[in-house]
Amino acid sequence: MEKRQTLGTMVIRVCGLLLGAAATAMIARLLQPEKFGEYSFVLAVMTILSMPLAFGLRQTLVREIAYARAHAGTGHSRQIWTWALHRAIWATGVFAVALAVWIAWGINDTDLQWHMALGLGIYVLLPAPKLLSGVLHGMGHTVQSQFPEHVLRPVLTIVVLAGVWIASDPAALSVSAALLIFSLALVADAALSVALLKRGSDFRFWPQKQGQAKTTRSRDLTISTLSFGAIASVQLINNNLDIVMLGILSTDAQVGLYNAAAVLSTIAVFGLGAVNTVIMPQIAKLHAEGNSAELQATITKAARIITVFGIGGAAITWVFGRHLLILIFDSSYEGAFWALVILTFGQLANACFGPVALILNMTGHQTLTLIGVSTSVLVNAALNLALVPRYGMEGAAVATAVSLVIWNGLLAVALKRRTGYSSSIL
Image (cartoon, rainbow, N blue to C red):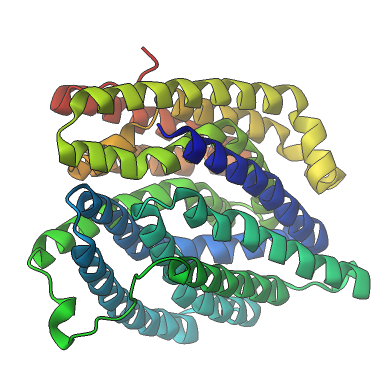
């Protein structure tokens, strides 16, 4: 792995973790558990609906642009971007119309209808930052691709929230205002990504010739995007199913408490996210070059770093979790401690299995990833239905933790059998 890129990404991720936690804590404090639960519910629904497209296209952009870099295909990189942009515009528009119809005629609660309408704006905006960061990431600008999302977005959120806190009664912050602040942060994220791409790069956002948008691999790119999108759909359902199920089967207050626990539990997978970001284009490039020895060495180094960070993060949340909930949020969130403990077990297992899904995706075996995560989401849904009505947020935490262990285990076996690579620390 490239040391400078790894160090830079680690710094960005640490800043993002701290700033993101601060932004979430401020929103949670200003809204309080019930309104924070509704805010979380709207964002979870919009994320589930929008991210499959954004994630699918982003993963395709990273992998294919990295492949092009391995073969010096800069012109092909621009073709891939134009192809992805056209697909994003058309697909987002079509699904936005369908979503608007559902909001207008399928929701009876007036407040929820208005909040979901604001969520529709977020749905339209979400793909842009993902696609732009995907281009930066695929071109090898790993640190720059992370800065808008992990630094700019939470900093802007904190500044606006601080202004609200100082200028008015903290209780005056509404769910609508919080959603509008989230939208503003998305626009700023996309704008900075555009500026970073233009700076010191001849990358063109629109083709100079009318036919340039067509690429000879359009069918392969479409299949890859659909596969990545399907994986993202299942992963997002798996990651947000607990919040949605709690919103349906329990109370908004439970959703708010659980969301606070879910945010803190990600400390255990900080290393996984940071290292995956660094090695994603490297794995794709090494695979395209056929350099399997260096590829396995990169995987092993990555797995060791991820495991060390996972153990350290889990220890912090288990020992200081109750105090962190009170310190970061407030005393009304202390009841989320046991959900935090359970979720951290699942996230630690996720870290210890290493970058298994990423390796499969970047080496062209995304179908195996889809099978593994699909199996786990079925387990997650069944366990949520069985446990949430009786045990509330602790039941949702158990369901999520078990599903994480299952899908990582399935993918680890598939990776070894199909490619010969191992994602373990050994």
